[in-house]
Length: 302
Image 1 (cartoon, rainbow, N blue to C red):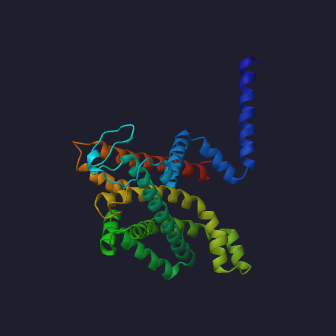
Image 2 (cartoon, helix red, strand yellow):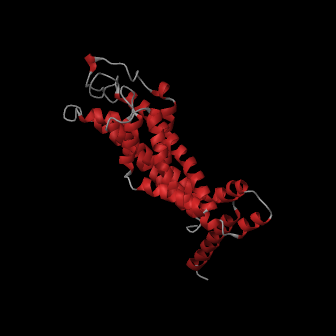
Image 3 (cartoon, rainbow, N blue to C red):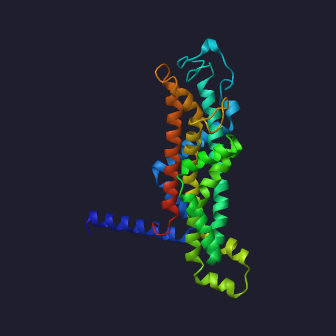
């Protein structure tokens, strides 16, 4: 046997050993193994950890009071004292971006989490019971889908009033229809499986079947949607803030910082560039993580 042929045999043995090892490890470890192989997702995860750290420890990592004004220092370029310059009323841009990350991430995560809980429950009930319950729920969701998402968000904010709490409610309502359909579709296919029929045959209660048998087997698409939903929620929060319907000044939030910056685009373009870049990079990072999770958790891609 030639050296090249021996090398190829050894390579095939190593690949076979890795494949055999993957078959014997748990689903969570296998998903982590697949996730680690995606370099872009790892970069996105590192960036999101960095942003989350900055948001959680904003009072420590910020260099100035984000709400303190100084008209003598207004519209200053980046300096050693003000790393990213100052805004139109002399507030430190870096500190406001840090505190804005806290608001944007909090609203995005909490709003999406509330929508995930509501959508999961609605989808479980609709798919499991079927019949008139399923028909009624799906028609209500169809009505919600008749309105574009941003229009529906503007409508609710206009009725409820702009505030942090109302923004979270809007994001929860926004996330509910899509997730309920995802969960419903999975439940409709899973409840025909033998183990569900066996659970019904031995007298397991409906709640037990839904939450202990059906729900765990729908977690993969829920996790993927929740991850991608956070990106959409951050974009929606920024869009509403840009329109003046989200978090209200003087509270720092990337969307309203972007809106204020556009008024001074020629004199101080950095006021608009910094929050715009942060919004873009954050959303891209979350989407990269979501795509990697989808590939890692999808059994048909393994």
